[in-house]
Image (tube, rainbow, N blue to C red; front, side, top):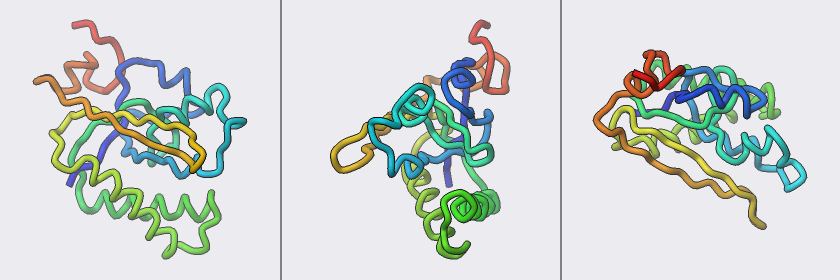
Amino acid sequence: MNLARAIHLDESDTLVFHRHARTGEWVISGGFEFSNWGEGDLKGKARQAFANGWLGLETYGRVTFAAVTRIEPEEYKALADSLAQHFVSIYGAPDLDAARVVALDELQHMVDMCDGQDANTLLTVARELSSVGVNESYRIIKSQEADLMQLTGDGCGTGSTDP
């Protein structure tokens, strides 16, 4: 099964988000974080996170680009457990069992988006507020016969794109 990892094509995420995701950590949309937001919340770095940030599942920071890659079942289960604990600790979910159901739904949404995509396909998210809540849209950017190490130039997902 496929999921997506945070990727940095330059250093901008370290400047535009309050907390940026670490290169290589698994990501999901994380739109739930904005479910109670209004126009007054959309200022500065918070606006940037809302507008186009994927949610990293280790740092709970944001990243602009995600890259499709394979995830092993054991990793997937660990992510579900960790996200469920996050829902209990941060969002007040009543217990881990209830939180795990929601965590699995969030992860499955990302798996469905990544399903059938080639490795290294890039994903972006765009959000806007509407009268009925948060609308999310996604863009899929197919790899152009180059792997991500060639794009970033240093093999770790950050740095110069110069050869």
